[in-house]
Length: 344
Image (cartoon, rainbow, N blue to C red; front, side, top):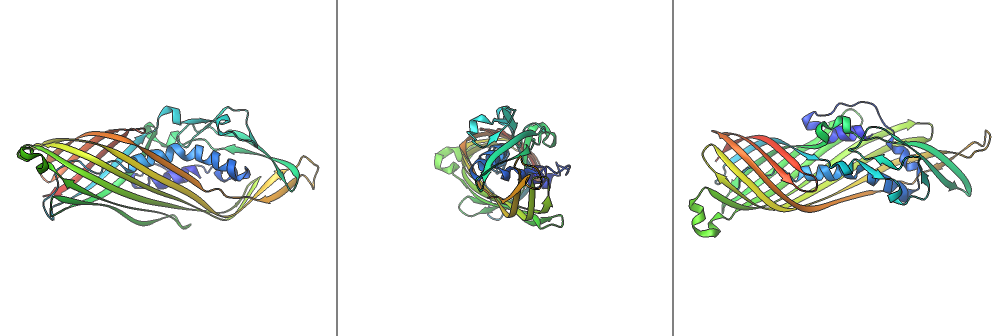
C-alpha cells in the first residue's frame, strides 16, 4: 500500500513505478490506540516532507505583475528527509500488546526491509496472538531520499500592486478502481516596495505573500484475504493542507534576479480508512479451535507540522521564458526547480 500512496503523491512527475504490494493493513490487527501510534510513526516523515514541499515554490520574484499581466509556471519541489527520520524506536511508542526482536522499524522514508512484529491481545476473554510484517520504507523509490511535490501555477496581476496565484489540478482517476488525486491552492502577493520611500527607484522589490494548498488522495483498497486479515470494501483517504506566510525580496536585473524570503509554514494531514477489516488470530489450541476471528477497529491518523523557513534562489530571464531554482532551510530542507512563461 505504501508504494501505491507514494505513486499518487508523485504521479505528476512520474518519479515512481508501481512494484510489489505490501499489506500495510495488517497493522490493524493491533489494538486501535496502538495501531494509531504505529501508523503515525510510519507515515509521519513522508507526510511532513510532503507538506514542506507543498509550501515551497510559490514565487521566483518579489515584483508583482502589472494588472492582467501573468505567468504560467511548471515546477517541482522536493523535501529532503533527515536521516534520523528514516527509522523510529519501537520502545519509544510504549506499546503494551506488540513485541518485536528488533529495536527499530522503518518509516515511510526509510530502508525497504520489513520488521516482524507480534501482537498479543485478548478477544472475548481468550488470549490470542498474530504475527505480521511491519512494512519497509520507500527509499528505493525516492531518489536522493526526496519527497516530491510537482506544481502547475498561474499568477495574475491585479490593481493596487496585488498578484493572485492559483494552483489547480482537477480530480484525476488512477487506474480503474475508484482511486483518485486532486489538488487546489491559492495565494496572494502584495508588493510593498513603495512603503520604503526611494527603494522603489532601485532593483530591489519587497512583498508579503500568503498561500494555501489542499490535496486529497483517495485509494480503493478493495477486497482481499491474507493469512491473518480479510478486507471487504476497503477504502482510504489522505487529506493534506498547507499554509505559508512569508516576507520576500528580490533584486531584479534584465537577465537575472536573486530572490529570497523568510516566513512561517504550517500544515496538517489526516488519514481515514473505511470498510470491514477482520483479523484472524492464533489461539495456540489444536484445530478446529486454532484460530478466532474479530472485526477490527480502524484508527484515524492526524499529522501536523509548524516551523520557520528561509529561502534563497535565483532566476534567469530569456525574454518571456524564465528558469528558476531555490533552496529552503527548514526542518525538511527543500529544493525547488521550475520554468515559466511570463508576460507583464
